Length: 238
Length: 356
Image (cartoon, rainbow over all chains, first blue to last red; front, side):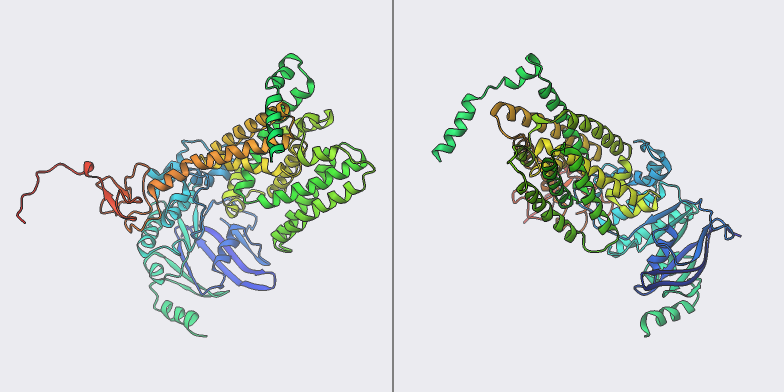
């Protein structure tokens, strides 16, 4: 039986008077590769942000490593946001961006060393080591996403949260990003929670699928024939 | 027109170019040494804070704080007190107010900034109109006079400079992360709200200590321009900080020298010096030359994203990866967007023989 990493109980989240999530109960285990799918404004990103502590729930709890102790928070969580526009001239090289993933562990009044092993390994793992001295703004969208994955990896996370990491990228690059994430999941025993609109990716890479529309509509295996029926219901029927 | 040229020529021909050095090394006047030390401190301070202001897109906000500081300066003269603390009070209140409005999303940030931006000078003019006698201090507040800094102001400048240096250098990487990706800074567990408010206070301190030297009208130019000049030269953040510090200190000292030599307001000479540095940097910027050579935005579908500085392609899927090639941007190298394989990089082979 795999160890529990994250335990979500009765989670409700709202933005002012707009309900985002209702009654979410979810356990995430080691070696999970959970795909999350749902229509726009269904709370997919909100679920990730709640786990990350970016939004405060109005009810419920999120605990780490233990479902009985809500105060435990001792796992490293890596986060990869959606593709975002970066100023081409922003003074940050690829290795500088990846080093940012180490800041929390390094602590105040210390700097990440130029030859930090975690940074080096993370860049090699995503195939971006040779670009380490390239300005981040000079990279393509797909390459930037790989750098963000390396940034998340540099902190040696137990779980990787990815919020539509392949949005706005062409299919060839989407495929390479997903192959990379799957390889990391397998080789490093990294748990993954992936928000995506791509059903094909869900079926190909994940071990569990969550269909969300402010609440969990369905969860199960990607090979389950019910998945297609649920997708039809939440996306195509009023 | 002739009168204007005559005045310029008179200034040049009557100037004593060695006066500055005489005051420093022969007469060893305290006021000139204090002005020099103040110049170095303000140059470094403005560069450090200005680098973050520029990268965080806070230029307009900073200008609003400077205008508020102007009101504080005018009130201090009216009350007959040393200006620095009153300037600081006005700056901190306006910056924290803007920060609070922005954090709580009460209204769009540009609205409150615009209000403070225009209210500051209006208040200042109101206070000035209440003077019994027009004070020459008004000119120095408006246009700057680094040579008439009081002992109290000088001491406070040194103390505040040390505090700001310590905070910025101690929290450099946290502010760097906050600048690049605020969401990631929150996820990393850094106290982002506190850091944001602290930064606003640091901007206020910097403006307040610099205002006497550079003047209310131009102070913000000194905060933004050294960083803007340094920005033209490097993609490394630490180099940006160092270079903007060098530019800041150099322009402060050069401005001080010109102010003493030609009897001109120090604010104008300092800002003219740094602005000149900026334009020279802009023209010579390697960033612009690199972009011209590589032109990453060409339409090559294979490797437009991946071009090394020497023109080699590093994209594994590029069908031309085995040849050193460049992307054409000029007509003499080929049409725009073409991938041009350099002949000297092709393998030597026997010429093919064929008949036409």
